[in-house]
Image (spheres, rainbow, N blue to C red):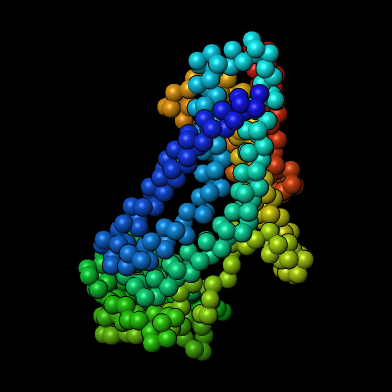
Length: 366
């Protein structure tokens, strides 16, 4: 039995590593095109691009680890069944449940490792990634200015640019949101970005345009100003001038629990409280997707009796799609108050475990 268990674990290692790198590439390929565009066409340094890639990887581990574990289990145990090795083991009186216990234990340890990544590493990497992007917007704003879409990177401003030709911004429209006053609309034939001396904000120099200004005596009344040149300064990137406030997904479980206890806004607003509780349960339940995927993958691999790469990967993607669809549905139900977060976010795991137990009984009877 010990030899067989060691054999199974050894056979799983290579497919797991192969799946790990393949799934990582699949998840990152879309982002790589955007990063290549920053490097080649928009002048962002290769060091900044490499930093973004490194910071991006931890945020994907929550998806990559369970998917890789599932794919490797389907490949190896599907191959065992296809080659009648499972039948031979049964004929020799070997208990399949005892055989796969080490595999399940390894998956359990990977789940705890995934919890560490999702709780500690991923929030920090996402927060640092957003900080780096903020710095890039300040240092090289043209890299993040795109024609033909609303740009909302700047506090209190929404920008629209018809075309970008080098450093020249053509057809500029700016909506400036002012507290207690009507929204200010600025139109200019063209403009250019001027970095601020403090490197924490931007200035836009606009040419040949108009600005809707509120009447000081009656703010509800607007009058139009024509200008040849207009300097719009102190445009701050992000939410805060001195730094960026953390989003909930960028907090650890301890930080979220502390927020639940001390943040009066969260305590008094039921929706915000549900969102915080949902994030806590999401981090924990999502971490145990690895053990859940292995539990359901083992009987499916033996029943399907197919160990080909394409078929195993297709089955894995189907299971992953079903799980994440249920997960997104559960999160929506929790945030909207239809189900308690502790129920909604754990329901996908519970359902797949129940199905795995049912399929395991069928496998033993085969």
